[in-house]
Length: 177
Image (cartoon, rainbow, N blue to C red; front, side):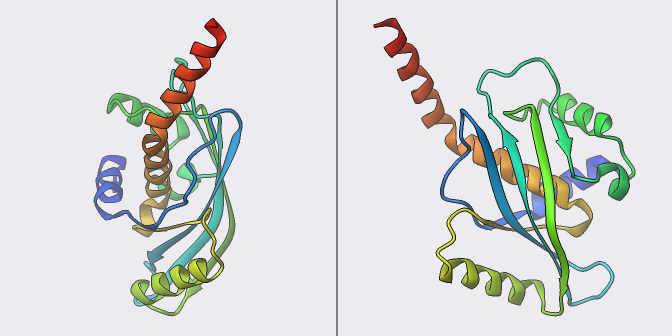
């Protein structure tokens, strides 16, 4: 499958079951922990569970001309495409990420013998029981998990844009006084 097909699949099949409460910090690093679930391509009926976090460096409203850097997403290894190709792919579609650097760190990769539906319910209940408001629960296709996670992070940035712009304007107003 080429990157265009993978992108379309990620856009149509990614589901954020539970998002983090807070947005992205505008003045520091933000760790975005996640649990990503997908149906196993190898064992039908099983679920692949990826746990990790994406470190987003200062999402900027005014973007520099440089292209974003994606580390730890294994584009080359899993999809056979270079990071530069992914950057160009997004650029050609007018997609801009509000930061220069995204570093994905998968801390745990396992297979759950339950269906995706049961596994999602189990993890959602666990997060609620722990009152965990920082970890997201995201479902998507296994073959394009990287793109699904980038869609989730981009949605966080979009969700916070109005508040971030107000903070920026208030800061500029205070500097003028």
